[in-house]
Each structure stands twice: as C-alpha cells, then as structure tokens.
Length: 264
Image: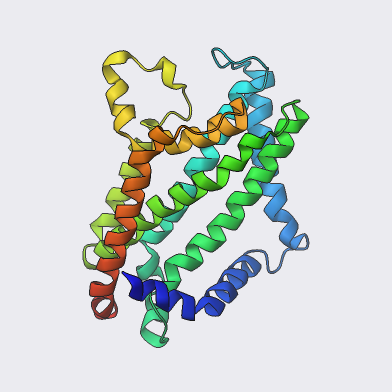
C-alpha cells in the first residue's frame, strides 16, 4: 500500500512537469493559449444556463429563481465530469502510454496521477465558470462552497480507485474498456443530475440510494445551489467505498506492475 505512495512522492517533480506539459501541449499552437481553459467552460456553462433558464424556462421544484435548475444541472454535471474524465482516461491509461512504459523507467503510479492533475485543473476552471454564470443570474457564492474540496477528494478517490483497477484489467482483457463506456452512460442516468431526487418514483428510489455517486454529486448541488453543507451521515458509505477502492487498487497495482509491460 505504501510503496506506490512513496514512489509517487519521489517522482513528484516528474508528475508536476508532466501535468504542465500536457496542459501546455493542448493549446501549443493556439493564439489565445491558456485563455481557452477559461473560455471553454465559461461558454459551456453560459449556454446551459441561458438555454435552460431563458429559452426552456426549466424550473426546480421548491427552489426559487429563474436560474435554479440551470445551476442545479451545471453543479451535477461538474461533479460528474470530474468523475467520468478521471475514470475513462484511467481505463485506457496503460494502453495509451504503452510505448512510454516500455522505453522509460519510472513508477507506473505516476501516469494516473498525471491524469488526475490535468483533469483537476480543468475541473477548477469549470467551477470558476459556473461561479461567474451564477453571479450573472444573481446567485452569489456562500461559505458552503468551501465544501466543494471534500467532494473533489471523494470523487477523485472513487474514480482513481475504480479507473486504475479497470485499467489494469483492461491491459489483460481489452473488453473492459468497452464495457465501462456503456456502464458509465447507464450510471449517469441513475444519478440525480438531470432530474431532482424528489421526481423519482418511490418504487425506484432504492436504485438511486444505492448509487454512491448520488451523495457525492449532492455535495455540489447543495453547496452551489442551496448553500447547504453536506450531511456527514450521507457521506459515510461513499467515503468508505472510495477509501477501500484506493487501498485495493494500490495493492493490485503493486502486484501487477511487473506484468503490465509484458502484457502490453
């Protein structure tokens, strides 16, 4: 368990440099350069907010404000995007970097950490864009927004553990990557992002309650829209699952690390 963590710490400079290089290469020949990191999520958030609030007139039951549903949706999408980006990139991570793994000598744990770092930068910029759009609609930040880092940690741990574990299996059985693409689409619709929890029929509520992403996504929705802090009891199961996945993945990673390159 501690070996991958110690290896990542020794190569922390390599990880930071790789994150910077990945972000720089993304817009290397763009005149606006790093400005696109703000413009993309800002446009994304503004379009959703405008279309849903002004054009479609979508409303959220029990919450006042023309932009309530738009902020609710953007909050859930931000949490889900962080989860899905880390997860999907981790599933194909070792296959996509097969040449580097064969030619360079570095701890394999560095690769998922680079993915996490670059994805987190994009996520933070998306939150900035959501904050700008919220303020434009008269919905101002509150101290409850300080709960968002807790959501980031839980989502990152859960996605990291599940994604790297699936990535290890995907090296030996390439169908795993295809399966996760389908599972993630179903998982999205089982998570209250597009619809509020209260709209779910009572006979189907258990499916949503069993979904660990429900409570984590709700951290974002409650903080950004309702200005509420998360309830500790609601986070016990997601926190336990996230921790267990990370521990199990680190153990698997240590045992399978020597066989990954041979399988690639």
